[in-house]
Image (cartoon, rainbow, N blue to C red; front, side, top):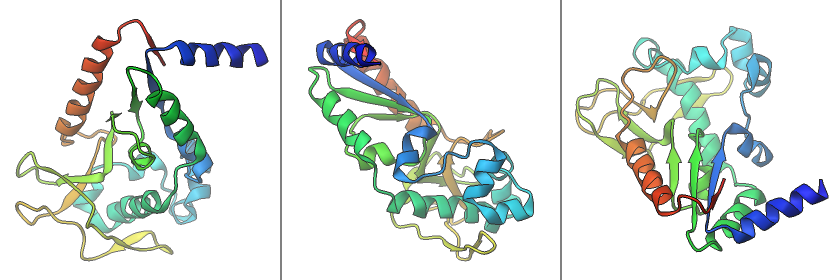
Length: 212
C-alpha cells in the first residue's frame, strides 16, 4: 500500500492537470446518503420504507405531474440536505492538489448535490444535472434557472411537500429540478452540455499530461 500511495503521489505531483471523477460515495464522509440499494435508501428515509417506495421509483419525473407533493417531498428534502451539508476535508485536499498543477483541475461527476462547487471548485461537469437548478415541467421554453430562492416545506413524517410548490418563472406552471431522472425524456441538457464542452476543450489542451 505504501508503494502504491507513493506512486500516486508522484503521478499527481508530476501531472500537468488533474481530472477528478466522482459519484455518490464522495459525499458519504460529509454525512450524505449514497442510496446504495433499497435497504440503504430506506435506512436514510424510513417513511419511504413504510410506503415501499425505492429510489428509482421516486426519481421518476412523472410524479411531478401526477403527485407533485410526493415528488417535491423527495427532491425538496434533498435540496435542503445538500444546502446545509459542509463538504468534508477530502474536497479541499483534492482542490489544493489540482490548483497546484499548471493546467488546473476539472471535475466530472454524476452527483447533483453541488458539493464540489460548495467546496470551491470552479470547473465542474454535472452529467446528471443539478438539484440547485430548475426547469419548467411543461417545457414552455428552454430556461434553466438557479433554485437559490426556492424553499420547499416538507413534512418529514410523510415526506410530502406542502404548497406552494416551485413554479416556472416564465409561465407560472409547475417547475421541476434540472436533473436527469429515470426514463426522463423532458430533461433540458443545455446547462450540462456547456459544462461538458468546457471539459472537452480543457482535455484537448492537456491530452497526455492529465492524471485522473
